[in-house]
Image 1 (cartoon, chains in turn purple, orange):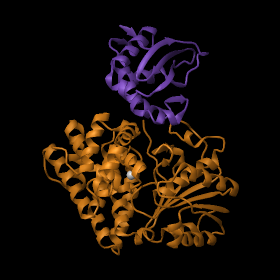
Image 2: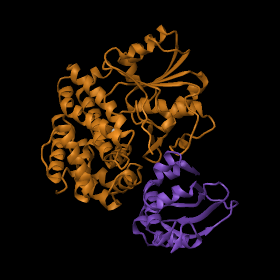
Image 3: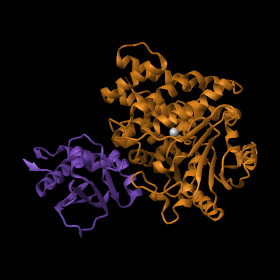
Image 4: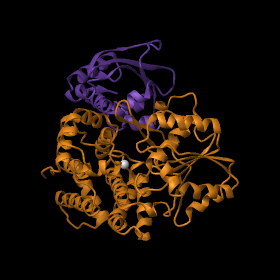
Length: 131
Length: 391
Ligand SMILES: [Zn+2]
């Protein structure tokens, strides 16, 4: 079992991205790193997962502190991230209904929605996840 | 969780009289020269003067409006400081009005920042009223803005729920004089919205209701409106159908006929309705072939909107595709991109760009199955030559 949002989970997610032909193609021109922020409901702590994405590949992930900068920062509650991983919530709909927040160049992300869909597919493909 | 957004609708014969009742001091009308020549700007201005509202007209919106044009309109608007912005025209004028409203209300932001993922404070300085003069785009009720990036030769899709109009005036007086070809192209756009909005992954019970009714109205009225422009019942039904379709797909999403149509339109500058309409039967065939779910949905749409009695989903969905092709033909709409006076040479030269832009269009990501680049290559080839995909 791998704990959702952990360092190990990040590694497996990265591997799924690199194995996905659909993601590799959809994101072949993508240049930009992300920090995914999972906020715990009580507001006391959060997990920040850094993902380095480049030309359809994942170049690495790491659990980082709040000082780590990235081109895009997407945040949401832990329970909503779990729903995404279980295919119960479309994260783009989540963004449009305020369940997630996104900081970064909006025009750039609007041109990469197909890559975003494939990226999420890889989130849902990580196996034996403990939530 | 999902939202269903709509402006206040004022519709029917005499709906434009609503402008005599509104409160305000200064209105900025975003339109084009044709609207002035047809006397529509005068109609609107006179109504506003009865409400003692001063008017300034920006008439420079071109078909497929560019980022440059709306930035210019935004500057003039910001200097004028209106408390009402009115979009008067087809989708180009109404989308420009949305973008100009955004520039005016958010002077510190870039136009490209108009995104559904960000919350703004719009409609603080002014109200937005949309008055469609064609029956098709649904832009009077949607919250998307489609502009053309002239340099990159592609469409720029912007969107925010906050940019939706406060009021949409659906008065059949405006589309009454549309020539047959414009009636057909805009009506086919409405049909494409209704059908694509019904199968989008973001479809919902409210958008479904709208898409079914709009499909039915287009099938019953478009041919009549094209062939006899003075049939005011058909005209009014089509005018409402376009808005209803807008309320449908605007609250779900358009699909890959729009990805293809946006892409072809930006490169070859052809009417939006025909660009998406040509693609429509091909994308339906593609989706029917590719998965079970769209097949079921098309069959259900055919049964609900057109009383197709066939019980088998594949057969029923094929009947719907056939009916779409028959309607395209009956309205004089092209059935292939070749028929739109795009030469093979020109098409081939721009093929990779057209495929890449369709692939990256945001309407692609809300379509399932989501086509690959290779799928788009096949679709464009079929739609160019007018060769149906084998079902
Ligand atoms: Zn359209």
